[in-house]
Amino acid sequence: MAASKCTRLTGELSRRFLTSVDTVLFDCDGVLWRGDEAVTGAPELVNELKLKGKRVFYLTNNSTKTRDMYAEKLRRLGFRAEPGEVFGTAYCTAVYLRDTARLQGKVYLIGGQALSRELEEAGIPHLGSGPDPVTGGFKDWAGVGKDPDVRAVVVGFDEHFNYMKLNRALQYLQDPACLFIATNTDTRLPLEGGRAVPGTGCLVRAVETTAHRQAQVIGKPTPFLYNCVVKECGLEPSRTVMVGDRLDTDIQMGSTCGIRTLLTLTGFSSLEDAKSFQDSGSLSMVPDYYVDSVADLLPALRELPQ
Amino acid sequence: MAASKCTRLTGELSRRFLTSVDTVLFDCDGVLWRGDEAVTGAPELVNELKLKGKRVFYLTNNSTKTRDMYAEKLRRLGFRAEPGEVFGTAYCTAVYLRDTARLQGKVYLIGGQALSRELEEAGIPHLGSGPDPVTGGFKDWAGVGKDPDVRAVVVGFDEHFNYMKLNRALQYLQDPACLFIATNTDTRLPLEGGRAVPGTGCLVRAVETTAHRQAQVIGKPTPFLYNCVVKECGLEPSRTVMVGDRLDTDIQMGSTCGIRTLLTLTGFSSLEDAKSFQDSGSLSMVPDYYVDSVADLLPALRELPQ
Picture 1 (cartoon, rainbow over the protein chains, first blue to last red):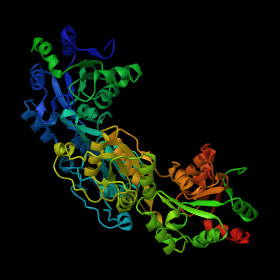
Picture 2 (picture 1 turned 135 degrees about the vertical axis):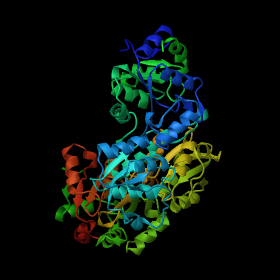
Picture 3 (picture 1 turned 30 degrees about the horizontal axis):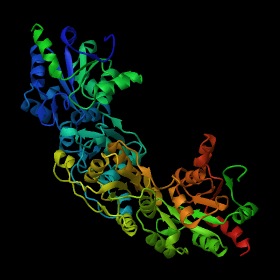
Picture 4 (picture 1 turned 120 degrees about the horizontal axis):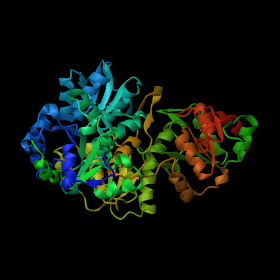
């Protein structure tokens, strides 16, 4: 649709763009909020989109919140939001196991409360959540008790990740029939002030390294979150846009799914990053459009008829 | 030296081979012992090599034992051994930091008691060994206290590895001037009966993934252990052989160092593995010679003059 890539959305172009869009898929962190503060003007934009009859969905790689918890945070920050609009990796991992893999058996879970709750909600039995202190030595670890009903290992964010959990994952994954699922492969969780802590991707790589296998990834840049939206809610790809702050996840996923992409510069990736992907020919990580902030779309949006 | 690769050492060929060798570099686990039992005939072979005036060194990627602890285990299993003949990654990491990197400052250590002791022995101040329970949340982790004197992160085997240690490593490694050293990248520690537990390589990959950097690796297949032997004890490469059970570490290192290589089939790699590397042209992982067990060399060795 875009004649040239990486075009700044302003003025008349914004109006034409917004007119051509029915469905907006938002990444959250770095796009709608940073840490615990909404991006200025972002709630007004989202609420105005809805007033103008656009559909809004929230697509996040974060596995530490359920749909309900996400909707609650969105509302607390001023966004109109329903749990059914949230497609996070905690929820979508449960959907994958139930509907795509049709898992018969239990999950060994490296992950937190939110993942645990979404699995429960989907009726998927699981074990492993919470602390798992390391004791004993090599022989004890190799002979650690295994639940014979486990048929999948799921790796999401888990602050209790340790050698014992890594070892249990290996013991299960030595069976080639055991599924191996990762919520996402983000290497860091960015926080305010340029700070960061390790992301789920590190845990996934550790398990992949010992298992000599690659995980099936639920989160962006794979198309699974998008496919969940399509399946549950339907959408017209030519009238849909993915809005994100990361070229390697949000924009890449939008390109893979054949929808338009919009980079916002309030988060992880910079315009220079996008230009350098453009120069190197990695066009799937170059957005169709960019804005300094999603709030920049508000004036054009307000000019559209109801 | 070998006209064709991957030749079985028997009879007259064994005698000529042993006559052409002054120095034998042995990997230990899977070569001289398995778990806590010596490979049958291996102590006799090593002791006879020494009686015949050959020099023997022990090169191991294992970072969980000091030189003293290794020499003690060797002697307990019947091998004649001195601490000065042991070149393990705990000792050699300390040597690297002291003599190669000439580290001014402290080490943040992900590793166990043996690494800690070898660092101490080399006069290198360090912190981090032992349990480090995770507490708090994202902001606490990003703002975790850092020792301003830390100039290197070292990752070795650490059963207390967890999210907190991964996070501390990231906080230090965000400074590009901070060195990043890994004892080895073995993905599993093999145990008896085909069992295995996760190896140091998994911990290294987790840290590399979050740090967006690659570790400098001390262990095989890099030539550093070999270079330590050369520097401390001297050797004539054309009269030296590396004996190991792993193609990707022992044999690869021997090839890199330009010495002859001998695969023993009592451990990790099989003859089929070697043949398939040969067929695919990965010749640096194909040994010059192989034996079913190092003990197979004993008859030929006994025929040599004192």
